[in-house]
Length: 404
Image (cartoon, rainbow, N blue to C red; front, top):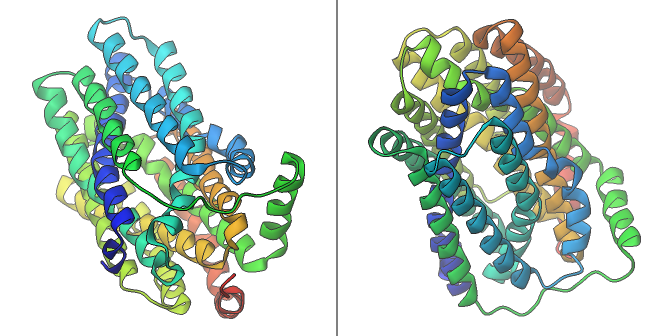
């Protein structure tokens, strides 16, 4: 918890805690609304794709733009737009004017805003703590918030949908963005250095660094593999909750919550890791766990076993995503931070979107269980490859971890 010793990070931390819980409440309510209105696994994949895919296309360019801007000012503005998106969605759902086409449009809007929000937040964390040696701990604590929200938010969403409606969940999310927006107004930091030159030059500089730095390239490839396969479970959870386990929105909330509990545990472990070797070792173990848990959940027919598999799967995926982020930001020069973070979020969210879309389409042709079995098989091949590169990756990560 050493990063919480910095006042600016504490203010951000508690504002972000409220915002993250609201985001998870909306995500679960939205997926349930889509499936309740349409009963289509394919449309679940489409809406998840629209919420994430813009980050693959816009994210890298957004990173170059962010490195040239006043990051804090723009982060406050993005929070206001995200709040507006939640309130519009709540109003249309409450008035029963919502339909499948508008749900897709709102998911696309959310994805576009997140293309700027995520790299803005991540690239500012170093400024919030002020000490480079505390950055990995701050990143782990930030990820811990995300996973606490994933543990708490989905069960709350399940209860709220049962007691009220999806509209209430969307309104709560809109209010939650205002908490972070307010907290940011009380943070005082010197503006981080800005990149100079044209957008084209700034973008090319970031691409050159990421492509020609082998450990960065390998870590991003790991993100692609995990989020293209194992992370696809998120799109299919409503299908498992309703069709496999004969449940409702509450069952969906518990499945999400189990994944969140596992992910929270993984971030606690990462927060205690101090060396790059320890982080990399945990990351590789997480990849193996994610592979096994995907297969176990795919064949589960009893809810208790499925919940255990969800916890393991959430842990494995979170270790990979958070561990890669910690290593990338530890290696990144300060003036390239926005661009490196944007490449991270682009690979994570963009290929999560593609994987979700493919999973929804495959589940329509096969079944949810068989789809996850295919995903687990593909990920196992990459896990074997990464194990063969472990020693080289460790040596190059340590070599490139130099203060800049």
